[in-house]
Length: 507
Ligand SMILES: NC(=O)c1ccc[n+]([C@@H]2O[C@H](COP(=O)([O-])OP(=O)(O)OC[C@H]3O[C@@H](n4cnc5c(N)ncnc54)[C@H](O)[C@@H]3O)[C@@H](O)[C@H]2O)c1
Image 1 (cartoon, helix red, strand yellow):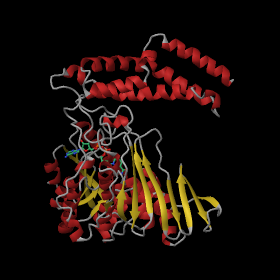
Image 2: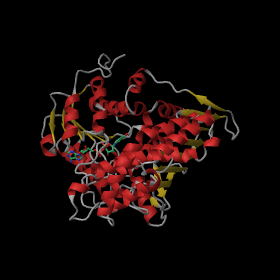
Image 3: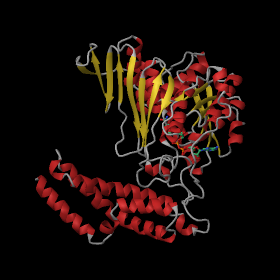
Image 4: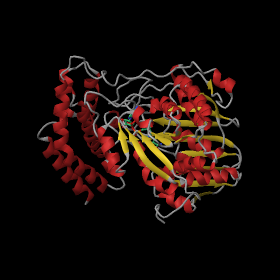
């Protein structure tokens, strides 16, 4: 079945779509044709993003100017601009008469959320949020079985979206270094991970049909090296919260950037339990703690087969499908503005809880106007990093500092290869498959000349402006790379000898 032959909706009506933000926004257009959608316009400040867009959709209208974009004749916007800007950008789209499919999260402050809910209601347009993680084969299966009562009432859940993305603080989403190179990413350089909470909370809300009612989070201060904001505010740390759901159960929602990416999902119901670990879905059914635990293989239906060919385990297909269906047939999508608010608010309040020493906060229901009104002026949000001027002093030489973003990206990537080899070689005798270590050594041998070149540039920038933030993150990464050891010319030979010894041990 190919997407060009499949007809999903029984109508000739087409939805003319504009994409605002052409990084992540480009993930969707392949799915559009089968869903009666035609991409006709794109908007991005960045020329290289616009050029990539036009390669995919020749003949579309492309601009860097949002006003010009919104003035074009099309029906709906896929909104994939900067995360903390979604509310205001969505409101601008609604005002221009467009339906909106907004990337996560829906808004960044409570007051913005109130304005957005008001704007959706008065626009009469469709608003959906792209929370795509609930719509994998496993999560859709769990949602079906939950509704059938297989698991009973929710008692407790653990949902995780732990994702270390340090280099994205210094690059665009496609890995290109930020330009000019003495600046950092608009929000991935500073946003506290509590704010990016929907990919873990969203699935659990969708599976169980429950909404969050109260949230609490203790501060967690440790940060990985190489991140710009230290302490409890910025990225690069762990962001756990405990959330009461509407049936009185508790969920641990865990986000963060740390040394073990995990997307584990575990649900405990009064009749049965489920856990999804490394893509394997296991149920424990029978109602006692030691009931049989077996793996199951959730199956897709016909549309699911089409979905499976798209990104995020099919999730990108389903959010677009629900959005098109709501526009064409009026069937409500799972993440309308109210469910989007339920999913977004616990992140904002969890961050607030963590900086207020673990104080619990009720999660207001934005369906209820009087509850919503109480948050009209609530502009609380985390301090932002000065992405344009924060890295170096104002009189710094741009010829040197503009090498920063490329240098930092490469230094982090090369250092990760060094650390993987170095740290695994400390437990070489205990590794089940020691041949893997040889591969790690080979990777390091290949990258070493690049690491050594990058170390030199990093050292030059750091020594020119030693008390700057730019210098600090470079030094932290140089330290991880054990510069004193690895930058010596003779290190290449020492490494080659180590590899020979390793290979002899394996043979
Ligand atoms: N649901 C998912 O699985 C998923 C995956 C990746 C990203 N996202 C979300 O998608 C959004 C976009 O993420 P991204 O990865 O593309 O990174 P990004 O935030 O770097 O990209 C935003 C793009 O929009 C452009 N842009 C921003 N504001 C603009 C404006 N006012 N006018 C013109 N262009 C503008 C930027 O130049 C940039 O290319 C983010 O909010 C992110 O959270 C979601």
